[in-house]
Image 1 (cartoon, rainbow, N blue to C red):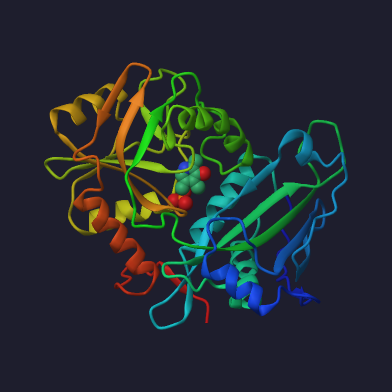
Image 2 (spheres, rainbow, N blue to C red):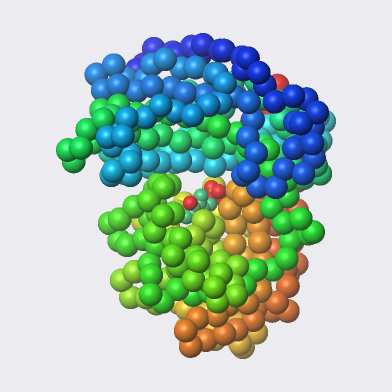
Length: 366
Ligand SMILES: *Cc1c(COP(=O)(O)O)cnc(C)c1O
């Protein structure tokens, strides 16, 4: 698919009636997660044969869409999620945004969508954060959650890759995912549903994967748990991940295990960063399949001392209890263990410029 090689410049239209300062101040003092939005958005158009064009930063508003737009019928849609952080010195920064750009393009390729130059992806975020910087949450531990996404806007009901797309970036001030510290979560092993199958779209960040995870997630909630964990679709034996977070297991000899990226697991940037931090500390880490039977046996024997889930939104979250159709077990004390807490502190420390950044993961925005 065509990618315009020429640099694209953004046309900026400030919001004619932005949210009043007092209303905004109230919103950013207690933003919650994903319910309030900034004043602006970025839109870049794509047309087959022409490439990416008409990049705008303008008022956040509804997007006109033909009822035959392919995304509404065949779900040709992908997204990313990253945060702008407030640094200790008052500046702002993104965490490994080129990793999001690269993953976005891998998702695009899997969904037969055009790729976007990585520089353009990062520049779009830069532009939005610059125009909406007053929306940065005032609450301790807050950040500006950035949601880039792309969808097929062409009006066409035939089944083939669309020829028109929109790339959009919106932003949402968010507070601490967990208000009072980080409690351990309880998770439900789904035995009736799978998230991703070999050859499917499990490694792509596409809306369709989330649509398919809603029923099992609701089942987990109905049974009194916080999250669902999916097993592999072929054997229903291997632990894969949660609906939107990767999983790690910590053994009593210090070894750390996480399932390998074999195509059915979303390659989390938090996952990758934690693997790097663990290796930097000289820990034994292995990316290998871990069965649900082993999980139960290790939790019961005490070999498994900690288990945590990780992702951009909730960072690092301890898993305290696990239940399934015919099992139930507690991991360690049922609370966040020392390595879980250490890794969360380490990662958030780097993201906020309070810890050294040996891998240059931080991209300053000022
Ligand atoms: C986004 C996502 C993750 C976490 O990825 P991060 O880059 O760490 O935020 C994990 N699993 C799924 C299914 C996801 O969509």
